[in-house]
Length: 58
Image (cartoon, rainbow, N blue to C red):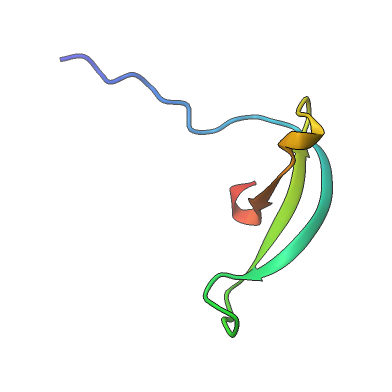
């Protein structure tokens, strides 16, 4: 039996700019579970490709 093909699960992209950040509550307005999100522009991407990313995903 053959092994299944390997799937790449990590990517090495470079951040061009961190434009801003925000703190969000993932469990509702009174939640103590605060998360940090960053507005990221990746190297080589256009201005239109700028997106919010969770701190834990970076």
